[in-house]
Image (cartoon, rainbow, N blue to C red):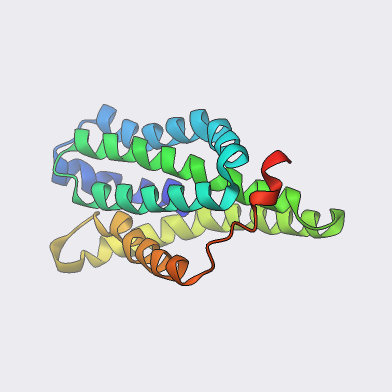
Length: 178
């Protein structure tokens, strides 16, 4: 959720570094949002068909790769394409979280979990912009806006290492028909 908001504060720096037009900058934001919105139901159906854990991990891996592509994008057009792919990756992950909440626990625990999910979304809006501002202002080694995307790479890689150490059984697979 943070990735939707983190980009907003970096747009002026992206415009300068990539010589991007206002239209391309709008596509950096809208491309992600559109791909995410259009593919959200597809992501949910894939989780039903292939298993939520497997679909989530596929989405997370794709999100990590697309974050790297965004951070290394040499042109604004490349960044737009990478952002669309990043939005598609997010659309694989989010429905799995919501489906798992729905499929597990009783009504009280679901309500509590959905409350936390909603609160996390609100915090992500604020945190994303603050974190984005800090990363852009820090201009780490002259990288400007790029760390707002690259920050996802070590997180995704770390999760991949943890995933390999976990049992291969899909605890969420039982919810495929749910």
